[in-house]
Amino acid sequence: MIDPGLDRDIDAVIAGLTLPYSNGPTEGVNTKTKRIARQMHGRAGFTLLRHRILLG
Image (cartoon, rainbow, N blue to C red):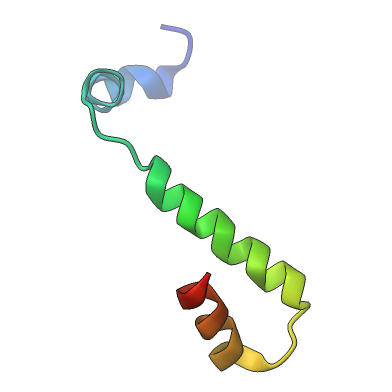
């Protein structure tokens, strides 16, 4: 293989390439949350951020 780390974790690499599971939906939620937080520019605190995430 190209990377020695891939050789050490070959079982995880094979599982990641063959299993039908993905963390894509979770990453999408994380990206959306970070986008909302950036748009707010740190205004109004956690309560408003939480409401915007839950509503949108």
